[in-house]
Amino acid sequence: MTPYDAENIFAKILRGEIPCHRIFEDERTLAFMDIMPRSPGHCLAIPKGPARNLLDCDPEMLSHLITKVQRIAKAAKQALGADGVTLQQFSESAGGQEVFHLHFHILPRWEGMVLQRHPAPRAEMATLAEQAEKIRAALASL
Ligand code: 5GP
Image (cartoon, rainbow, N blue to C red; front, side, top):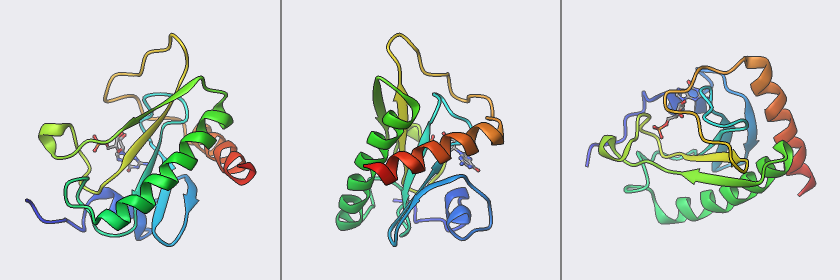
C-alpha cells in the first residue's frame, strides 16, 4: 500500500498550515466543515494520527474516531434540522478518495433533497462559519 504522505491537505489543516472551520477537537480527532459541501452542514471527521484511509488505520484509532463520528452526526442533524444523515468514507483513488488522510464525510440529509454532485461549488465562508457554530452548540447540548 502507498505510504502515508504528510503533505496532504488534511495533514496541513492538522498542523494549522491551512485554516478550517472547526466543529470538534480532542487529543485524537478533528472535525471541520467541508469547503465544497454536497449538502448543507457537510462536515468531515479525521484522526490526528497518520492514516491514509480505512485500510491502514490503526483499529484503536478508528474505534475512537467512529464514536466521535456518531456524536457529530447527531449534532449536525439536530443543528441543521435535518431528517437524516449519510456517512461516506472513500479509500484509495479507485474507491473515490481524493485527499489521502482518513476522513468520514458526515452529510445531513432532508427528505426528497438530492446530494450535490461532486465537485460541488465552494461554499461561502460566512455560511460555513454559521453552520460550524450551530453544530458546535448542538454538540455542547448532547
Ligand atoms: P474524498 O473524495 O477524498 O473523500 O473527499 C475529500 C473532501 O475534502 C471533499 O469533499 C472536498 O470538498 C474536501 N476538501 C478538499 N480540500 C479541502 C480543504 O482545503 N478544506 C476543507 N475543509 N475541505 C477540503
